[in-house]
Image (cartoon, rainbow, N blue to C red; front, side, top):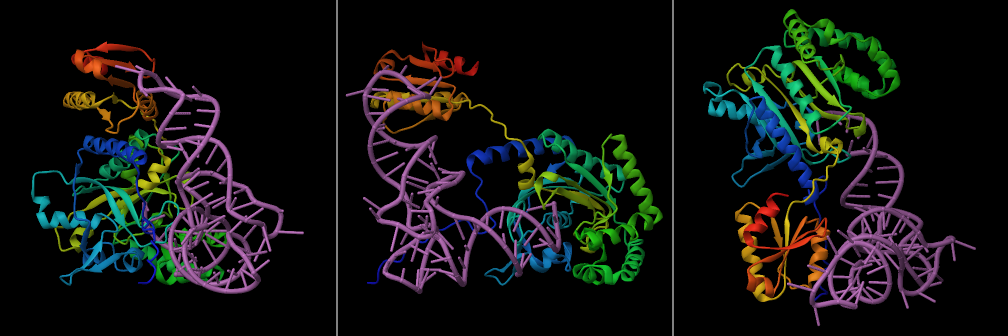
Length: 420
RNA sequence: GUGAGUGUAGCUCAAUAGGUUAGAGCACUGGAUUGUGGUUCCAGAGGUUGGGGGUUCGAGACCCCUCACUCACCCCA
C-alpha cells in the first residue's frame, strides 16, 4: 500500500476559540454578575434555538444590512429547509413572542440572554465568527423612562464587573415619519460636496448617506460636520421622546454624550440609539450597542408593540474586565497504599456530600510528590491518609499555607475545613 | 471581501551572511527525599521550524502557493 497519509492536525476553525478552564472561570463570574443584575431589574432569561429559518433574519435584520447580505452562516438541512445560525438575537426573541403570544400572558416582556452568535466576518481583534453576546430586550414599553433604564442597567453592569473608562453615546435616529425628510436633506446636502468626498463616501451618498458619518478620512469628517443632523429634523413625537430620555438619564446622574452621528448598523432602529465605547479596544471599540425598534413586531405580522434592547459583545467586555484571582477552596486528599486509597475515596465522598470541594488523584505517588501537587494546584488544605490513619480512623489535616498539621477525626476535619 | 505584517518546544524567545545533530528560560515528568509541599541540585521527555512545493552540494532562513494569527479598511458586539 502507499505510505500512510500524513496526519493533519485538526484545529479549531477560523474565527472560533476554545474557552479554556482558567478563562471560563472569568466568563462564569461575569455571567453570574450579569444574570443577577438583570434579574434585579425584573428581566428573565429566554433561550431560543441557535438556528432559525433564514427568512427570519432576512426580514428581521434587514435584506440590505451587511449581516444578511454577506455575513450569515446559511445552510440547507436534509429536509430542504434554508436555515441560518443566528447572527444576532433580537429577531429570535420577536419570533418567540409572536409564536407563543407572550404579550397576552401576565408576565412582563423583559428578557435577557447570553450565548453564541455567528457571523462570517474576517476575524480580527474583537471580531470573531463565533462570538458571544449578552442580549437584553424590553417590549411594549413606549415610555422613554425605559430607554434610560436599560442604559442605566448597562452602566451598572460595567461598574459591577469593574470596567472603567467606557463612554456612553446616545442619539435618536427618528422614526418613519421624520427620517425620510432627514434622509432627503442629508442626501441633497452631501450631493453638493460629492467631488470632495472619498470614493467610499461618494458611493454612500447613493446607498446609505448616514454612513458618511462613520468615515475616518479627515476631509470627509470635515465636511460631515457641516451636514444636517438628524437631531434637527426629529418630528414632535421623537423630539419629546429624546428630551425625556435625556432627562431620565440626568435623573440617574449618568454621564453621557449626545453623538448626533451615532448610527446603528441595523435597519430596524427607531428613536433612541446608544453605544458604549472604550478606547482600549482598538478599532472594534463598541462594547455594547442598542436602541429602540418600534416597528419590527408589526413588520413581522405580529402585534403592534414596540421594543428596545441592546447587545453586548462578551469577548470585548472580557478584554476590559480585570482578572481576579479568587483563591482556591478545595481539599487535596493524599493517600498511600490500597487500603488508604479506598479510605480516601470514602473521605472524598463524605466531604462532597457535605458540600466541600475536594480533589483526589488515583495514580500512586509518593507523599512528597502529592504534597507538591497540592501546593501547585493551590489547595489551602491537604489531608494525608496512610495505613496508620486507616487503622485509627483519624487523619492528618495540613494547612498548606501555614504548614500546621494536626490529627483529626472525620467530623473534626469537616468543621475545620468549613470554618476556614 | 481588500491591504500590510507575523508564524521556531505547552509559553516567552535564540540560532553569525544559506553550513554539522535547531538551543535557552519558564512549565511538564521522574529522582535526590519510597510519611510531608513552596527553595535547591540532577536527569528525562517534548520540534517533520504552521503545511505543501521550489532554488541550492546544503534551507528555520531565499522564492511560490496555502493555512493560521495580528493590525487596519469594510462592518459591527
